[in-house]
Image 1 (cartoon, rainbow, N blue to C red):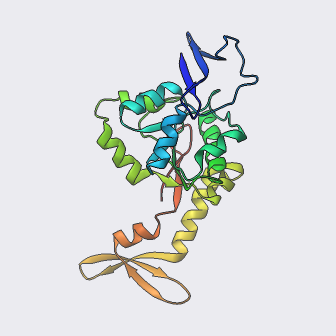
Image 2: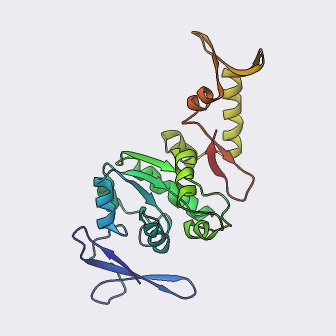
Length: 243
């Protein structure tokens, strides 16, 4: 039984899990419906406190994941009903939030989280996207935690080095463009602008524009592509990766 609370910390409703894996919402009066109940994100009081403290707010796809994240010292939330079950009244709670979206590794989870990211980008201070490496098909944050060698420090490194800023181009991509086509277009764009050139005993990256030609070191090149992303299409579900 997962208890949802309103901003004052009072009982709003429950989400009850039945074996093997079914979920039903229940009002405080015992009725199995949310009719007449204010829908709120899971762990709302902790969410609001996290925003006030300028902490990262992680959007996950299940209450169990959020509870596991809390044990990690993270601020995490989700929504009743699973992936893609977004309601407009959720938006008001994320004003000024620094959001990081972590989808489950399945098509429904990815598409549902894309919708959430697009909606939150309208109100939050920032929205980032993070695909967790090495989780099985339909795997989630809890599966990643259970893998040997994964810990809080490794997760922080992933957040810092692998999360991507959600941009309008990602919104457009979520609506239309095939990931393979996107990678081809990105490669063509980079090849037109950059080239690898030898310089003595070093290898530099040449950047050409209408105004000038510059030589970049690898760190400079990585910084220039900080907001560029591509797709890893080696698995069943395409994943965004840093370009």
